Image (cartoon, rainbow, N blue to C red; front, side):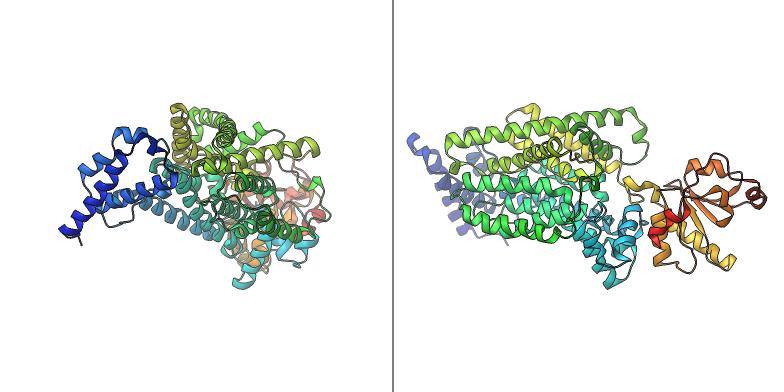
Length: 598
């Protein structure tokens, strides 16, 4: 319903009073406090949307006025209150688009969790820590034991039964939460809709990040909790929920230990901002009791028993240099799985360029954080605006994370993150690029950051897949292969004996044997002895083993995604077995390789 003419005249008069008072303010009066300036701007902003008028907009948005207002407010402060007006609908187009992307990615994530076959690390987690006694979670620590996730997955499979989806349910729920948090973070940090949409799409569609929004590992859960803490700490001064942020950071560490460095960095950066930048500053006592102790003490108590016998040798997966870290993250973000795109030279060039951009982003955020500290120091910390607080929080966290990793590497030999263990670096780098579009005063930096976000979004769309996880592509067809093997049990009237290429297919096939085909499949052997190949009914092998065994075995199935070969004995195999082993094949210890899964 449109307002009456009397109400419109009242609104117009009020609007003109604000504008004229603002324009006629004497020079010395322009030193009004920021609170008064912001209040009048917001009041006029609301009236302008209630009574759309080109004359009023020209009067308010004069070039001189815009030049006198260099500060760009975050997008979250610019939405009009009257959501029914045409201008409001136009402004909310970005919100609608973001909601469509969020819903589509969330549904795709659920579909993937239901349909994607179990992969190596997921199966190993179930077979070691869930199929056996639950106490193994606390008494037997490996890098595969993401303690908080393991307990949640054990609960979900215990309540709903064991399946691919129930094993992945904690990750799926955390992935949906991460998508919502990513949208809110992009809206809070970015200053225009263009950078906001690109930032959110890059956060949601990055193929490496998307893998772990459903995979039954602790990375997705830890990423959700870490970004939730970052979202809470980026709220306006005095509105942060310190306990929630602290518990989220502690939970991120419990879900995956690789998040210990970024969590500690965020604790430090947020505390520094709260003590020196906020107005009024938070007290040290409040920070210790409500921000540091809940998460830190909770995580220490939760992990004390599982980590009591841990050594550095348990953390064997990582990089030897930060350049290797950046290269591995760029490679899986740009060329996640083979497509026509990955075969082009352009993709190789962009991968290398993205590595350089990642390094420059870290340098830019570190420099911007230092500049923000100097600027706030000169103007008094209490006068710092919200954008400066976000620069200090995000840039300080990213810089401190890298500083802590370097210190740990140099002092104790701790490896740098690599591939999946560096997910937090991808998220912080993308958020930094989104922030630089509005924070930087240099046009080259702004357009460079925007172009990088666009490239990341387009390549992520091209690399989007629901058929395989990038780091476990060899297990993409594990469920189909297990079903084919089990179907042969009906033909032979007994359990099928299976062997697989060593360190590749065995855990996933054993998962299906334990959960679905216990009476139709014998324990799957990791590696096979050619001298005793006649003991097996089926081999599941890679290209190399398939090429060596092709004259002795016949191929019954090849997975179109993983390339795994399923072989059955040929007619002449019985005579061949009696003549000797297959030439050029290895002979692992059968009893030793299969013992852990029995």
